[in-house]
Amino acid sequence: MAASRMDLDGRPIKPITICMIGAGGFIGSHLCEKLMSETPHKVLALDVYNDKIKHLLEPDSLPWAGRIQFHRLNIKHDSRLEGLIKMTDLTINLAAICTPADYNTRPLDTIYSNFIDALPVVKYCSENNKRLIHFSTCEVYGKTIQSFLPKDSPLRQDPAYYVLKEDVSPCIFGSIEKQRWSYACAKQLIERLIYAEGAENGLEFTIVRPFNWIGPRMDFIPGIDGPSEGVPRVLACFSNNLLRREPLKLVDGGQSQRTFVYIKDAIEAVLLMIENPGRANGHIFNVGNPNNEVTVRQLAEMMTKVYTKVSGESALETPTIDVSSKEFYGEGYDDSDKRIPDMTIINKQLGWNPKTSLWDLLESTLTYQHRTYSEAIKKSMAKPTSS
Image (cartoon, rainbow, N blue to C red):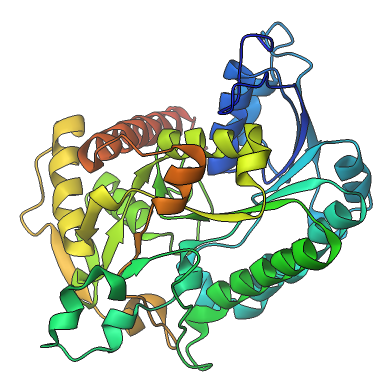
């Protein structure tokens, strides 16, 4: 397999060993699957939980047995981290707190998780001359220039004022009292640190800015596929409402615009970064699908239609309700108006373009979630009750 695989410049791809931090999460589980099924690479999978990758770890008869090892650890306080990074060729850091409700209610945890806890990873990679692929967020862009223009300004229609470019667009956040920006600010600061390590100490790095990656195993259905408490991201919120036959809550009328990309398309992009270091090193990449742009209200309407199809259930008489951001997220919430990625750099460097339509990625995701939810309900009903 290794001999037949070539990189984008026609060179044979050599097997490498990857230290993947956060391998047990949504993105990590899909990336591990891709690496095991399609490449000869080895993975040291680091995480606190392994539920989403158990199918890759057992049994020993799997074709990739021996190429993936799970290490249960928390990078906050584990002396094994540097040793594991030293053993590998590449470190991929996926670890983060990235749930919008936490940005307001747990701003300190959010800042520590996304900046302080990431510092040792950057330090160990730099000091040991190990390549780093760091996962950031599209939220580092903050608000668009367009959002500050008068409502009747013709410039609002000019993509230069709202399409987000890695090497041009400014990062515009709200005031300090808007703690919603604690996540984006922490993520931007770790990006700047990584970039500085590259400039001053020669760290080989790639930074990934995901734009709403969606698919099976995404976090979370509270209490079933994730924590019992908390408010997940918009698509998971809507999924949860649909599964529990509750109206979908539209924050501030659902006028914010977002783009969504299918997890399997996005993982293709990450694999290109892994296997083409000469093209990926030193770059920041938007990874999203500008063709899948909708308002949050339009997303709710489409998800309702898709869920009706995959579940066979009729839609609610009142499928959506409006709530304020203060009511939904609490004090200190703020938001960006649009997040539309420019794809020029990733297309030029890696030749990557997303393929999956919004309808198709929603159908895949909701089919998986409906099945998972139904199975969980059946299991709970089958449990014997105490007399």
